[in-house]
Image 1 (cartoon, rainbow, N blue to C red):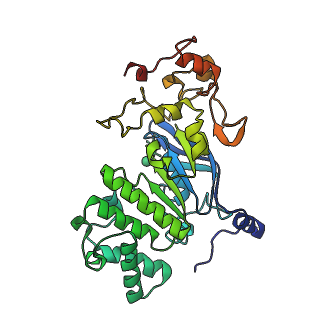
Image 2: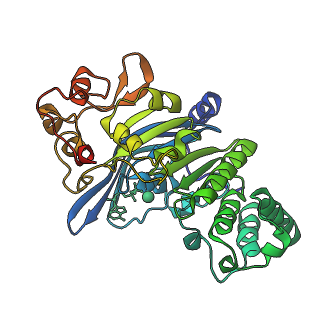
Image 3: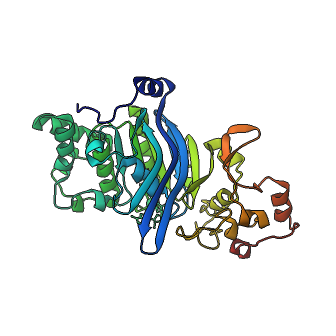
Length: 365
Ligand SMILES: Nc1ncnc2c1ncn2[C@@H]1O[C@H](COP(=O)(O)OP(=O)(O)O)[C@@H](O)[C@H]1O
Ligand SMILES: [Mg+2]
């Protein structure tokens, strides 16, 4: 085992182990300098993750889900990037750690499954060696043990005839089978925290459920924590312990899964929920696409970033940014909204009353 490159006071590390907190992210911001100006890709994100638990991170494309994940994984390009805030993994600070410092964490502590299996697998290398390579490199296994372990992993991710597949190339497998291989690679060194970034978006619907079930099974067997990133609230509904909804680089609602679905507060979360295709609908079409587009992260609006698209928005929403606060009756349920969906203002707007109503195109469908 390599020596940890960051030193923290021992009591921090002991505290993290005792409390069951694996990851503690506080006020994380990631800004990119571009020719258009500074892109505030992530702008003050905080959450904690306990060992063995699943956090679902949900939001439309461009909301900062991948940048958050990659910032924690240490996988962002360094040029033009500023990262501030804190990322404590087992009590150790990761902000400011370079690739050398991360090397001892990748694979055996932190691992990631990306959306497109073809970008994470080497197309000209046989499947087996793509797994054994990291086993030998990170865990120091000999050739034979690595091969046996790799075949065991292919079996664990339910690849039929694993000995035969071991010697095949990624191109010989279907998309679903390739994603299973990617998961096997990610699990190989026994990470304590797995990021699954839209792991099923590239797959067809029936295969999606199989892959998500597989991830859940493996997570349970290994007592691994997982950050499950998706643009689809339906994907995390039955699979996450807690859900963080992101919009324009911020968490706008965060709650235990049940509480999020039964008592959602953010109009954005409501809009996301209404955009889930329903199985009861024969065409499986999205009934209510969210009207309008997310804001430009170079010059986000001064108030609530969702206000321009929000059916409940009032003047204050366009001028002041609502802070992320707990519900009165539930300290674990956080939301950032002046007129949550169960407020009187929102209710009266839904019932056709109210003034200053900003109708969104969802009303037209
Ligand atoms: N290297 C980069 N340079 C500049 N902007 C970036 C970079 N990476 C991501 N972004 C921007 O950050 C925002 C958040 O991106 P991302 O986290 O990938 O969104 P998503 O929620 O779809 O995963 C987007 O506006 C994206 O264009
Ligand atoms: Mg993404």
